Amino acid sequence: MKKFGLVMVIFTAISLISIPVFAQEDITNGGTVVLKGEPSSITPYTIKDVDGGNGRWDYGTRLTVTLKKKVWSNLDHNTKEHRSSSEIDGNYDNSGWVKARTTSKSSAVGPRNSVAYCNWDVK
Image (cartoon, rainbow, N blue to C red; front, side, top):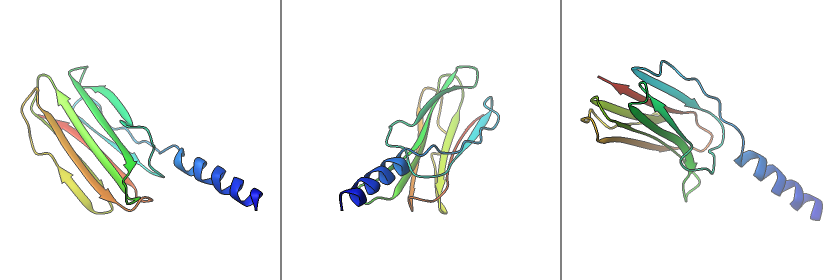
């Protein structure tokens, strides 16, 4: 019985720290990241400087209390109108266009094994 418990603990730990797959697009005018696999327990998952350092993009996934996967995409840009969006399992959220120096925020929730998409865009 001890071996079974140890195997379950190891399996759970590995599944929680599995590394998602990224697909980064053009990071000047907009970008997309595809997050596959179990959510990371690290929040925020990633913060990247975008658009020549004029913007900071915060995106990632995490588990909710109900063990669903939450995806988010937030962008703060100093000089341009911008937006962010996120999607998981057909659930889509778009921040809409916001003015410079305002954070655009989007998030969506879906099944924990679903592929999640994080996006940003500037005018």
